[in-house]
Length: 410
Image 1: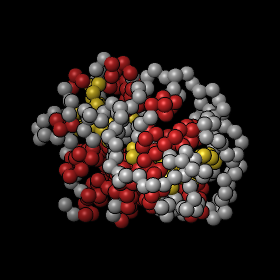
Image 2: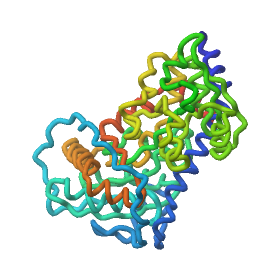
Image 3: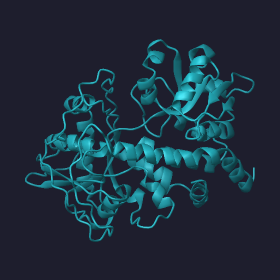
Image 4: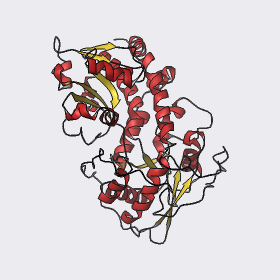
């Protein structure tokens, strides 16, 4: 298979899928940054120059959550299963007693990133040596590019600065967007508090319970419905793994696809968040009407799926082309590290290690999980070392050819 033909094959099937995926990802993340559950408060927008930006929002003390009343406790969001502790060397003798941690949020007060971060600021000191104070400061602008630039270039790595921003910022970096002054893969990655786990699922009456059933020559086949935002996944499974999938396109969104699955017009769907399926059709799961058969994540994924559903990473060696796998990684990164926290490049290793340990312990803590679950916010933890691996494998490890193709397709 020649390189040019490989590029043509990927582009032919993915052109209709990946551009809407990027748009959909950006819209989802933008929606998360304007969460209606918390009333916004005024804040000054920093200037666009990363070198002169300083946080201007009024700092919040640890333990102060957004002023609006939280939604009533949710009954549909189960507490996640404890995950295996990441392999880290013992935390060094370090203390943050008497110090202040500054947490930069790349969006305005009142959004999803702000909400998560204020809960993190309340709980994280309990797990840091010396229980330091955490001050939350909002630095909105350019879809959180301003905050990322400040953390990368201006924040003093010898001080205690951490922050959060959109996990899709790598798209602006790869696209050469004006104003981007960071290398996404060079941040010191501390954790991701939640992920979005896209899945493939099928009607139970199809008899498909394993992705391997679709990989046998002459074996089972599946009619998969697709919208423009998720067809990239099915196309890659067909082209790279020879999956026995008949793709039915033309559906405009979830409502049309769910109706088609219910009526038996199509058998399955690929590339939809499992949490969305649970929220929109809980009876399908309770009544065993559908079963997930593939998890499209670069991490552990949703707690419901960890032990029973194979991950796409298990099929990495069966991809026909390296470029196909690299493009898939680039597409999945934002969902796999959906609520990331970082420290600036150059932050000392012992500080990074202590922060990673503290984040991991906090994400397993029942009080922290319950505070977010009460607002119907899931905790699906990813350890800092795993976030770093996901980012560097997908971005730092991708070839120039994959970068170029990705730019062309987006």
